[in-house]
Image 1 (tube, helix red, strand yellow):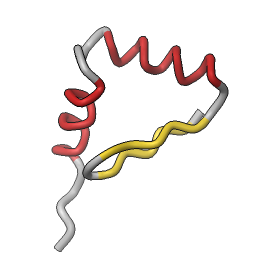
Image 2 (image 1 turned 30 degrees about the vertical axis):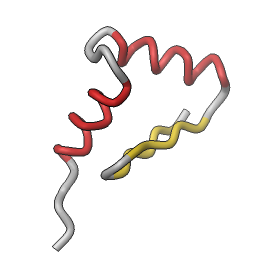
Image 3 (image 1 turned 45 degrees about the vertical axis):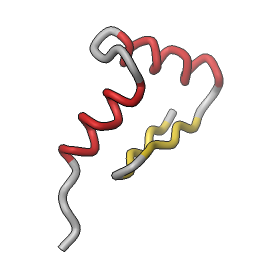
Image 4 (image 1 turned 45 degrees about the horizontal axis):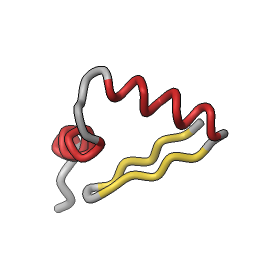
Length: 48
């Protein structure tokens, strides 16, 4: 399973059960997927 995070979104690739499992894992810390995306995108390095 791979998770690619971009500044304004993300892509998950893998088997359906792997993606569901990863989303359940993230739901323990974040209420919405949007919250997780915003938190992760803030930690990405800024382009020059």
